[in-house]
Image 1 (cartoon, rainbow, N blue to C red):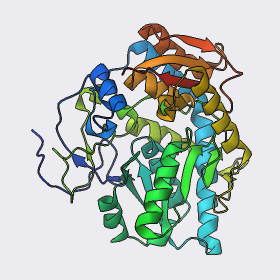
Image 2 (image 1 turned 30 degrees about the horizontal axis):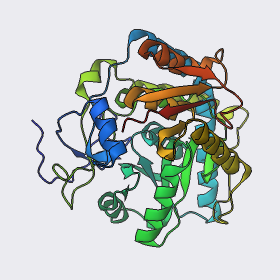
Image 3 (image 1 turned 90 degrees about the vertical axis):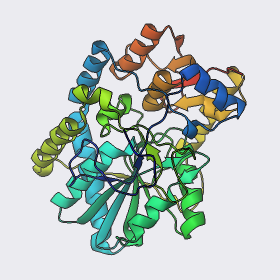
Image 4 (image 1 turned 30 degrees about the vertical axis):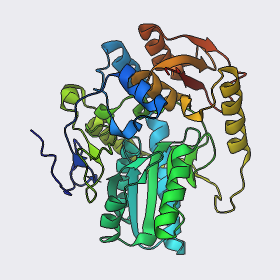
Length: 373
């Protein structure tokens, strides 16, 4: 039995202690069925962070698609992580960052990239630390966790890490709550930034990041974060549930070990360059405008006034089919290898999908959530 009393003890999930300290509180909660959860969210009776469904076990076909994506994407991930790490090291060398760099990965999607980037920075001689931090839409970043980090590391060296950007909702949440609480402007690092809102990215492509189509078993065997007053106290870190029932198919350590090995092999190869965007001006770039236009058009076509029902990007679209109650999925191409996991889920779950490259904008897939109330 897990203890739901107050606790603030970092742990590493199924990663090694050197890889990450998750600043989360392991808790127990009764799982909420997807239909019940969807109705509660859309009616406004409960916030999504107060509930969680049991994480489904991916079937063998889906795991095979993941493994294929892993093999096809591993060299690109290795090259782009090293490019981001070199960009950060350059910031340290030129003085725009302090000598002490602290990565705060936004759990769960940021964790695999954060582990890899932490390893890359250490390989490059940078003083790096890595924490896993919760951020929740409409609730903000976990400031108990961030105060813990700032008590141990130079606040000027904090970089927030996520796997990718969707339509920028979490980025806006980060900027609002971090600035409101600290007066600082957050620096966001991602692997893929199709909506153009990150400060440093591997690319602006919406591509199949393998870790984006799995959940706990690629992110240290933890659930998404929870903020429910029944199990999370005022002084606690945000909560999570250990996902032990997927332990036998946990790829977390194997995935980062494989990519890290490639990163070390690639150090003498042709160097990729990170994408850096000046977000301090506050002006929208072409990608941001293209993203907003696509979301707006899809909302009009599917007659929804709630942008939270539109989940753009391969990773977000796939996760929405796994966790939510999808109405329809839009894909840019049925033959695209990067979309096979999503199309497989649609076929297996009886989810309607259509090939609409005219609607997907800078994305290759978009899921629209059903209106249930």
